Structure formats: structure tokens, C-alpha cells
Image 1 (cartoon, helix red, strand yellow):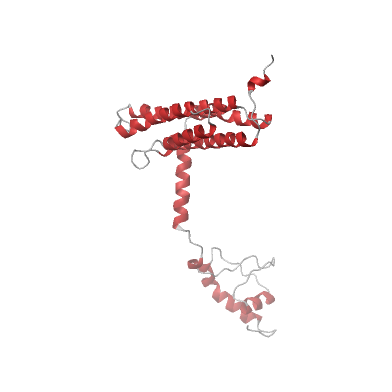
Image 2 (cartoon, rainbow, N blue to C red):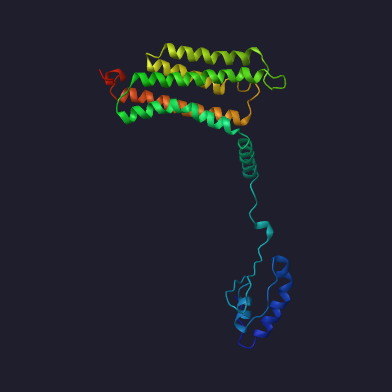
Length: 246
């Protein structure tokens, strides 16, 4: 640290003025050289000065631009992917969203009603399975419907149409096993997994909004059915016929 005498402040001010061109190249703003004696001495003593004094309203920043933070290429790529997904989701037709939510109401209403009632009702569990099987059959019909247009990326080949037929067949099997809630749950969850992930890597993908909507519906159905299965173990079983007035 350099210490100057009381009569050397003029020399310190002259040195600071000589450094001014270098400071202008390193900084984004030109400093204002209205300095007092004490401030000139402080600049000589400290090469980097941040002033709060009203006489010197500037901040000298001499760090190189090479030390500034660089953006991570992987982070930029990730942000770009997220932005593309958001743009694709905005293309989702609103009627498709509303109808999907309406189709999930019977599936979600059954376990919520049983949880509030404190009993497991086999009739309501069957209604839930029936609603989920209808959605599973609909997902199978989607492949047939998209394969019909000549301009579609999905071709009516054996794999594509076979997956479309397998889903209604598994829904029918789930209804046959409805007396055993565990077997019916395993069957319908297997059908939903085939409907969501079947043909991945072998067939052209659906539009992004349709794939996202189908995956979201599968997640809701899966959680609702597993909740019903848990209620069948925890709550006592009771039939709705026992509550009907005689």
C-alpha cells in the first residue's frame, strides 16, 4: 500500500487522470473526475474503488470480460427444449382438454366417495372399472382413427392396428375379472401401459399434445384405481343395496 504525504495529493490526482483512458476501456461508463484530496489518495492506495461519496458518483470496475459468467450450453439446450414443449402444448385443442377432464370424473368420483363414506363399496368399484375400461377402449380406437387418413404418419400396418385391438380386448378381460378387484386392477393397468408406451420406437409418435394428454389421463386413472385398491384393504366392505330403503 502506498502512503503519500499531505502535500502530494496533486500528484495523486494527476496519476488518476492518466489512468482514465484505461478505465474507460475496461468499464461501460466514463468516470467523473470531481475528486477531493482524500479520494485521490484513496485511489492510489486502492486500485479498485467503489465510492459512495456525492463528490465521486461512479464505480470503477476493472475486471476483465473473460472472467464474466458464461452460459452453460447444456442449460441453454434444456431451456430451449422446455420452450418448445410449451409451444407444442399451446396447440392443444380446448375441446380435447375439456372432454378428457369430463371422462375422468367417473374414475375419480368413486374412490373419493368411498373415502368420505368410510366404507368400500364393490358397486362403485365396478363403476370405476367400467369407466376406465371405456377410456382404455377409446385409446385403442385412436390408433385406428389416426391411421385412416392417407397423409397420416401412422400407417395401417399389423403392429399399429394390433395394438389398437388389444386395448379393447384387455378392457373386456378386466370386466370379466371385476369380481376380483386385484386381478381387474392388474389387467386394466397393463392395458393402460400398453396404450401409453406400446409401439414406442417402432411406430411414429402421436402429436405431442395428444401424447401428453394421454399420459396425464393414464396417471390420473392409475392413481385412482390404486386408491380404490387401497380402500378395499383398509375400509370395511359394504354393499349399496344394504343402504336402500326397504
